[in-house]
Image 1 (tube, rainbow, N blue to C red):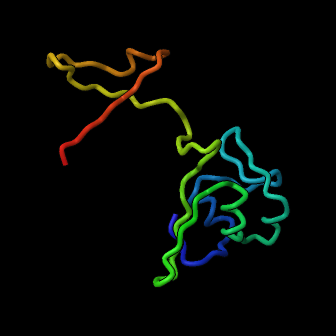
Image 2: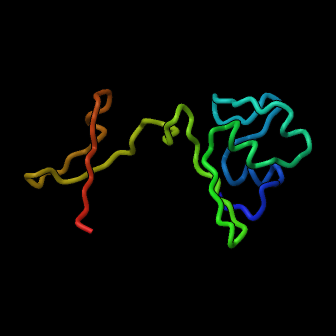
Length: 114
């Protein structure tokens, strides 16, 4: 989420991140992160919220811009470990569907020559 200010309305934060600000904190699905009284004014202090939610925040001082990074619940950036179905040719040219391995541990290795 790109920001022009470190103080933004709650609605802008919700639209930009997908998190809903509720009395119990910032919530997405079954996960709620307590924020204390930091949401009482209707605006959010992004530096405080980034710290409380463990979201990366970087600045570009010359342009007065900030970027608030993605969810990092548990130190991981994935919100789910479920991969989309991929259908790709195997080494023999036969089509292979990733979902045929559902329930098994899988490592997907991707490489590109550029």
